Amino acid sequence: MDRGTRLRLSELNSTPTSGKTASMSFNNCSSGCNGKYLAFSHKHLVQVCEEELLSSATEECKEITINASAKTTDIVTQAKWCEIAGVAYLVVASVVGLRIYTVPFSGSASEMELVCIWTPDKQTGKGFERELCEPPFRGIACPSPPSSSDCLMVGSSTGGVIFFHVEGKDFEFDQVVKGHDTAVTCMGGGANCCVSGDQDGNTTVWSAVSKAEQCRLKGDGHPATSCHVRKDRVFVAYSTGNIKIFLRSTQSVAVEIAAHARCIWAMDIHPYKNWIASVGEDTMLNVFEFPEQVGNLLSLLFSSLLFLFARLPELDISHLSSSSLPS
Image (cartoon, rainbow, N blue to C red):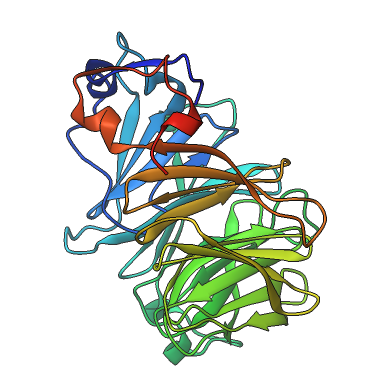
């Protein structure tokens, strides 16, 4: 955030999402269509709004509301934008199955089209194992573009990693593999690969081409809340507030950061810079820079208390620097 930015609570509240706030769940805010839209879940609904209008004091947020199913008890567990073969899809996972929507990059949220409804109850055929596809579903990923494999991966509560083949707007069940002994809690994409994390903190890297396991990284019993992969490095955030950086080549921990005082709710990696951002239950937003060479120290680029912006009616942060904020 620019240090000279002036924030007012009236501006934040001028673009309400119909009074609906994001549910308190891991990775519950996703940006899609080159940053044009934000999506988050609220109970059984998904709110989609235009990102550029969120800070506007004069325009209301253009939004649509998506029902995960006809029942209000069918809670959404995650909503995530995925770019597959140049098309933006909003993948909505719930306690019953998946719903997948698409919107043109040049279009608007009102043009979103439902292209797939999938539930394990209606799935049969080769490669399907019902016991590995038990809801609720959590963890959504696709390989980072450009990719030689057009696929989507979703995690299940019984440790299964479900692969879908994508062709055009058609999502076909491909196979499910036993990825974990406990529930999958998060997933992230990389170059022709994806990574999944589970309730015990174990993470597994998968080939998006062969659907085979590439490496398995052992946790310490604490849930993995967010994970990403870039080249040889695997980034995993935990409910303990720590972030670990593993090396795929040696399957060992290269760096461990005490990033937060409490549970990390979300973590993301910059598309091309060596930056990782994390937010936690301690109301802190931290941005770290990791070095190109393994063994060098990480540096904290930015740290900010998020709750200040929500609690104070008017806050001028032009005089603050990242070093003056509590760490």
